Structures are given as structure tokens and as C-alpha cells.
Amino acid sequence: MEKGVYLRGVSKKFVTRQQETVDALSAVDLAVEPGEFISLLGPSGCGKSTLLKIVAGLLPPSGGSAWLDGHEIVEPSDSVSFVFQKPTLLRWRSIQDNVLLPLDVAGSRPKEAVEYAKELLALVKLSDFANAYPSELSGGMQQRAAIARSLVSHPDVLLMDEPFGALDEFTRETLNEEFIELWQREPKTVLFVTHSIAESVFMSDRIAVMGARPGRIIDEITVPFPRPRGAELRKSKEFFDLVARIRETFDLASESSAREVVAP
Amino acid sequence: MSLQQEEKVETAALGKVGANQRNRWWARSRWAPVVLAAAVLVLVVVVWQIAYAARFASRLVLPSPGNTVASLGRGLFGGEWWPHIQVTLIETLAAFAIGLVAALVIGSLFAFLPLVRKTFYPYVIAIQTFPKIAIAPLLVTWLGYGLAPKIAIGALLAFFPIFTNTVAGFTEVDKDELDLMRSLRAGWRKQLRYLLVPNAVTYIFPALNVAAVNALLGVIVGEFVGAQEGLGYIIQQKAFLGDIAGVFAVLIILAAIGLGLFFIVKFVESRFTKFSR
Ligand SMILES: Nc1ncnc2c1ncn2[C@@H]1O[C@H](COP(=O)(O)OP(=O)(O)OP(=O)(O)O)[C@@H](O)[C@H]1O
Ligand SMILES: [Mg+2]
Image (tube, rainbow over all chains, first blue to last red; front, side):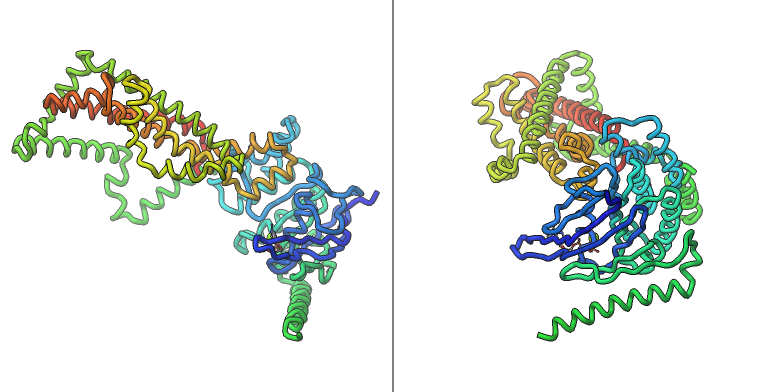
């Protein structure tokens, strides 16, 4: 049995209300090893969220297939957790109850699980806010709570759709570092969607660079920096060089698609 | 640091910043709102008394505050009004309960059965925009002079705010929250229990106090049209007999009932929903 996440020729077409067909994804191949941190990096509309939802089993692919640990993905799985761009906390539940939601839905709150939820709240620095309601927290704190919720069920795979996209740069960088620390304590496979080049370089082992129309993977880049990575990495020359190289990839891709538009 | 502590720190800081503006006694004191509200009441009564004494309006249409209070006391302690208060309260509670249950049931059908929604939507809009109290005389003719027509009008008026919010509460659900439930492998029962019902409750509660006040309104209109008991009936009797102080006294009782309903609903809401929206 092949452990990990595998995409084989995955494509997705949407039919819009005006009856036009949108090629959100076309022939995406991707292999993600267990424990690997991979970023999906690309401009808005290139199909990153669509790809993640297919892996989550929330959306069926139009063609090709997606696999998790040797099983084809046809529905959401217990061993996969999703983190959305907005915190998506239920406003009538306290922070602690939000973190415990996956257990409630599963049917019971075993004592160890409640202890683990408390531990997670401490790890994301929200112990003092366990009984607060989401509206009483800042955006960054809410997203921390959402991350704690995604970990409470001990998933093997974490799917994160621009989890820090709505935050300001300072908060985002802090959360980047905190999350990497968390992830190193409890290694798991992460598919991390972002459209920030620097964020993807800082966080991941490997970056799948995506292009739009149709959505596809145009390049795969291995990030060579050793872990643990600290804040100093962001200021190093190697970091800037890699960011510049990836930017180059995007410029080339948009030039060639611009030519395609002009040529005929 | 707890939330409350942070809040306090903030308020203290505010006080310092705008020292000359915000440090007045009425901005600082916890009792200031109560005192100010009471002052308004006193002012109204004083102006009322002056208007009465100076005969700004004929004494046939404007009673004195003193006579009004005397009339209120006679009605309440003479025991004459209690049966009528009871009737109006029973009608209002029945109207509210019927309106509530009907709105929850029909609202849920609308939310979950698209066919029902598409079929009845135009009619619901038509009834909603229709001035419903206009059918009060018709209902009295149909249902007689007992409690039934009053309850019917009250229920009809209580129905719509709850109905509208029930439909909204079950249909306006965040797409990501639905995806979250699906990713947690929640079947429809669990989606209902953990997402849809609590979401609907947050929409329905704010509609309840409007509905309670509407129920009272409908009942009083029903009593105006045709009744032998109830506060609406007493108002008409007193007006007919030229007992203006009596009319004012009953209006004060109605105001108290309306406020009472409003605060009871608010209290129940605050027990159920500890979060702020
Ligand atoms: N339910 C849908 N119906 C029709 N079209 C859709 C639907 N979902 C996505 N699309 C289209 O598919 C394409 C990819 O969308 P997707 O949300 O995956 O992009 P994205 O890379 O996540 O973008 P962003 O960075 O803005 O979130 C877009 O062109 C979008 O319009
Ligand atoms: Mg997206």
C-alpha cells in the first residue's frame, strides 16, 4: 500500500450559471509523501481550493483520481482535517467547544481527548480564552483556534486553504513560525495553499507552483533549507534568491500565456 | 489576562484621554442612565400637569396625571380590571404560542422543501405586505365574539417576523461551515443538530420580542372590533363614556404588559445565547 496523497491526472470542470464550462483543473499529477509539507502556490483562480477540496473528498474530480494511503478518495476521511481561509468557528460555541466540535460530531468526548484539546489550546496560546466566544477574539486568535480544532482528531493529513491569508503580515509571520513549531512536534502530511511566495518558501519542503486557465502544476521546487527554520531565515540571501527564482517562474508563465493570447 | 480585565483597562484609558470631555459625572456614573431616564419621566409628568392646569387642551380629552393615577389605582385595587387583564394576557400568550409554532413549522417546510417554497412564495409575500389588521372585522364575523378571532389576529401578526427569520436561519448558512461539517463526516442529522438548528436559533430569537409585541397589538385590535371583555374592550367603554382618565390608565397597563413581554423574551434569549453576534 502506498502511503501518502497521490493525484493522477485529476481534472475538474465547472458549469457556470451561464452554462459556460470552466476548466478549473486539468491533468494534475502530484505525489505527497507521508510527513511532507507541500505548498500549492499560484495566482487567484488557478484551482488551488478546488484541488484541496478534491483531496478532502468534498468535491469529486471530473477526470482522473485522487488517492490517500492506497484508497481512492470518494468521501471525507477521519484521518484528514481541513483548515479554511476564514476561521469558520461556530459563533454560538465557546472556543473550547469549537475545538471539541470534531469529537461531538463523532459522538463522544473521551477524557483523553478533552485533555488533548486543552493541551492544544495551550499550544496555540489560547488557554485563557477557552470559555470566550469567537466574536471576542481577534482574527489571528480565531485562526489559531481553528488550527487547534483541526488537530484535535489526530489527523494524518492537514489540508490548509490559505489559513493565514486574511491576516496582516506581522501576524501571519508569527503564526507561520508557531505553526511550524507545532508541526514539528507532531509531524503530519500538510498540503498548504497560499499565494504568498515568501510564505511558501518559509514553510514547505516542496512547492508545487500552479498556473491558471486551465489550472495545472507548472513547476515543482524543493526547498533546501534545513529545519528548524527561524525568523532569521527570512533575512538570508538564499531565501531571497529562491523567492526571486519562483517569481521568475510566474513571470515566464504569464509571458507565454500572454503570447498565446496575442499570437492567433 | 482575562477578557474582562482587558476591557476595564481600555475604559480607564479612555477616561484619561478625553479628560475634559469624558470625565463628567454623567459619563462616569453607572447610575447616570437610570437617573436620566427617570428625569425624562418626571419632565413628561410635569409638562402634562402644566398642560392640564393651563387648559392647553380641553379637560374632556386630557385628564390630569393625578386623576389618571387615581383611576389606575381604582381599576387595579378595586379588582374590576383584573379579569380583563387576564383575558388579554391569555389571548396574547395563545396568539404568540400559535404564531410561534406555526412559524417554526411552516418556516422549516419553506427552508427544506424547495417545491413548497416555490409554490407558496408569491402568496406569502402577498400576505406579508397586506395590512393584516384590516381583516379583523371579517374574522370576528367568522369566528364570533369569543377569544378565537383575537387570538387569530394576534397569531397572524406574531407569525411573520418569526417565519421570515426561521427561513433565513435555516437557509443562510455559511458555505464553509457546511463544508466543515461535511469534512467532519456529519450526516444530515448531525448537520441539523450542530449547525443548522443553532444557526436558526440565532436568527429566531431576535424576532421573538417583535412577535410578542405584535401578538398584543393584534389582540387589542380584535377586542376593539368586537368583544365583551379584555383591555381593548375597556378602552372603548371608557372612551365611549368620556372617562378619559380611565383610558389613560388602561394605556399605562398595556404599556406595562408590552414591556413585560419584551423583557421576558429578552431574558430567555440571554439565557440561551451567551455569545454576541
Ligand atoms: N462551484 C463552482 N462553480 C463554478 N465555478 C467554480 C466553482 N468553484 C470554483 N470555480 C472556478 O474554478 C476556478 C478555480 O477556483 P478556485 O476557487 O479553486 O481557485 P483558487 O486558486 O482557490 O483561487 P483563490 O486564490 O482566489 O482562492 C475559478 O475560475 C472559479 O471561478
Ligand atoms: Mg481559494
